[in-house]
Image 1 (tube, rainbow, N blue to C red):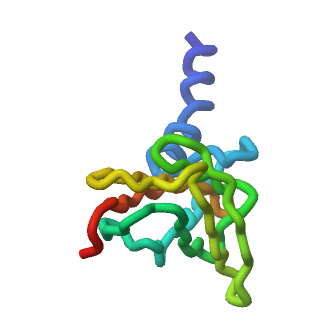
Image 2: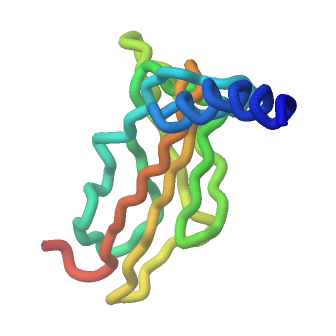
Image 3: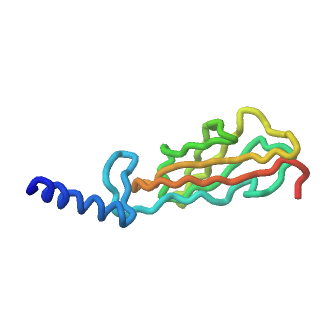
Length: 133
């Protein structure tokens, strides 16, 4: 009985940390508080229309660990070009393997990455292929 009590008490800090929003970092350590990266200024813009989808770009916040960025266009991985800005933000650009020009297509761009303090965030946005609106 005593061993069960000790085990239960040892687990309380972990349960408490998990309930308060703690997470494991991509390095495996316990994170009690962190700020996830932000992804914004998408081009083409979310829910916009383009005649042919052949490139995209967005900005990642200054707390983004650029080495952890992963991008998929319609489920296919895309290798990004990452350019640091003077502000510490990152300009991220990429191209799908082949242009998507089929009218009526809805292209999904999915971005995933970690902040420098270990929080993960995923962000998806969509671009329609067809006449520009």
